[in-house]
Image (cartoon, rainbow, N blue to C red; front, side):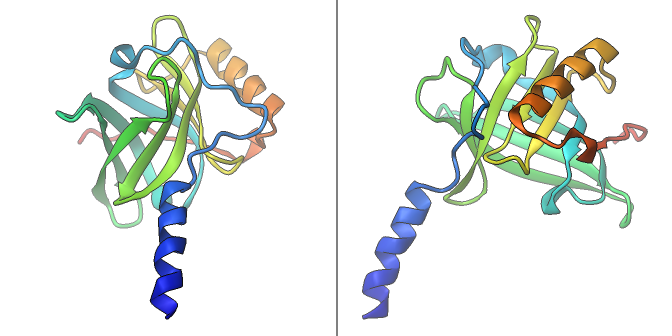
Length: 175
């Protein structure tokens, strides 16, 4: 009897699993998937459990044969003194010309991955999670110009992010 109720509940959870964008945030449009692919250095983030104690974090995006995007996240665990890697996949939530995606590292469970700012050359990006608890500043290089940093901090703060809580990521190790 309990299984009859559990299965529909799980189906609803999977189908609605956290693929939203915070109020006030708007995904980039037009968004060019091909230009976004490649390696990004994590410049800053709101720290959370899966990245805790990681420095030198990067994300590399490439196309899978089925049209999804392969997500290869890597970072150096400062306490265990070892490199960590997590492979996942990302899918667009609707139109591929809008930077509104969902990403999964755990089977059918997805989280929002929303590109809310990217420069014209696709060198710097501001990415919002599904809530005000997830935010990343990314760059194609381990450093970011001060003007871009200030622009992205201002944008994040205007949405409601507490930018004082950002962790600024060190990039001092070569894998």
